[in-house]
Amino acid sequence: RVLQGNAPTVEQVGQLLYTEMVIKEAMRLYPPTWINSREALEETALGGYRIAKGSIVVFSPYVVHHDERWHPDPERFDPERFTPEREKAIPRGAYLPFGMGPHTCIGNAFAMVEMKIALALIVQKFHLSHVSDHPVELDALITLRPKHGMQMTLEER
Image (tube, rainbow, N blue to C red):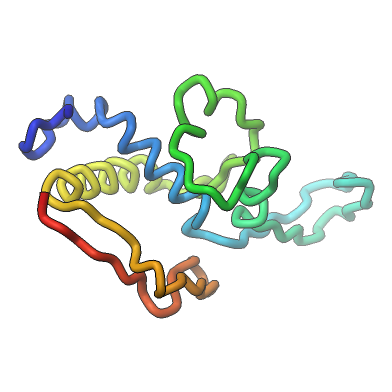
């Protein structure tokens, strides 16, 4: 609706709100980095466990993003989770596809713009659907990706 069949202008990229919601929900389901680690700079406690200074704490955005406490019905694809109102209700640390804090991915803003433009251009021309008899098997290497690709059907609009 925003683009009316044209390539987006710089101003229009910021207006692609639903496109951004779709991308955020896709990254909630399949965050680019599935596991991260941090070094404890001081002794602390986490979840009732003592963490010694210098300990490496490993955590998984994938696991956090699939936790029902923060994301009800976590296996369902629901871009509406990321309306401006609902996104504000997501607790800090419950959505971190690009990491968080001083170690946040420095390319996250560029990546979001790039994904919004690419997705907007694709869906203007095609209707996409996942081939249902080809389940997505994840390959958790440095990044999380489909092990055997992701079979899609594209139909011209």
